[in-house]
Length: 242
Image: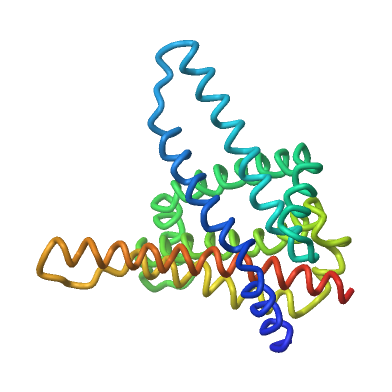
């Protein structure tokens, strides 16, 4: 299994065209999302612009990530973009489905304090020893994060199948290397970037703090995109073997 992970990393490293497109494309999506969040809805025209930009971002995301999943079949970047464009309606619908899941996940996270208080009360009653709400709130939050990772790993082969990167999601699910890779690349692409973003080293000047923040955010972004590409490469490799 370790050999398959190493081979997937080599596959991702050999496709700098795909990784570069993901790096640039996701930055564009982030900038558009930031602009979209600041748009007003004071008129019918503004509302129409809001809806049109949202639809454009969904299609751009579907094209960008669909081509990234398909490219490791392998295909040239032009062929991968063509494959994603041919499957754009289903990829766009899948993107909307993912966004809906993210909204539900975020909504569940907003109940962390209430869940912590209820969980602390229940745990204290059942164990007959005091359990703080902060402890149970932490358990709830990390449970949500683990559920997020598990669901993402479960759905990733479905996205690969829709994009044309693999022929069967079931074959990938059956491979232990996929789940091992999912754990490794989730740590590298989610946990480590999260830690980098939230780690604030002590500096004495604003300039040094700004430089530190820029370096940490850049490293976190590179790790996240590179891990996503490695997972796409691993999934394609396991799909070919199956």
